[in-house]
Length: 384
Image (cartoon, rainbow, N blue to C red; front, side):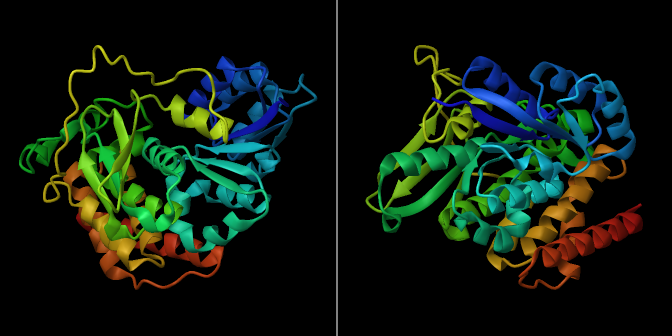
């Protein structure tokens, strides 16, 4: 078996570091040839010295200079500014957070490579312009989100034609605020929102999990990935995070994917596709798994879920504007400028202010993202 050349976008983040963990578990099978970061100097320098990639992309100019100086004694490593320069690999893991991950998604698919996609925002925001790239010869899109990886596995295992799929069911842990009332949540802190009960993730996605926006974005992503109507995708709260998603078929049968919560499993699935790796990330001890609980989400306390459903139904630029407004609102919450329960208010004000159109080019998507951010920031100024 030939060595698989791997590039990691967002290499110092949660997905990136766990991707490196997976590669360390099978070093003879994989070789890291590209790393990209925003501005994390010390972490990416340490990664480069260990992994000896061919290219390190650093977005921030001052950080890039420091990285270049630190790696000057490694002439085989090129330090560049363009993250898409790492996409000359057999598989690219896109772990960049937010809309900034879009260029990696597009460049990887356009070059006919395999994309392990953890950056849901790029597909959600730019679905209409990303979808045509998926038919590029050689291009493959393997989802790295635990829920979408689970759906991918369920659909793969069933072998059933599309007409036999009745609905997709995404599971949600419920986040740190499951069972809390709106009154209880009026004064929660950033630390409260970042205390996820089962998953270790970056701050933005952890806050999204606490508002259920993350699950709403995943509904839109599942629609884009698998071509299933938004209203045929359901969400159930499953606090143990062992059942990651399910597919229900027209005869009432359901196939589910189960494993302990460990992001290294979907990462290894994307790296090894179409084969499975031999390291059992997420193995369940069935002698200790006592129960599996399911309940409907509290949509009144967590309105972000229905905001995402509405954007998904509207289509066009609506998901891009939803994602952009949410990024602005979450950043404001993390910096202490707004309360947690004001995040959906910013999103609603943004979506109500801008007309939805159908994007045909990436510039249309970028413009929708820009306008949504401007409106969201304006609304923040009014709130403050």
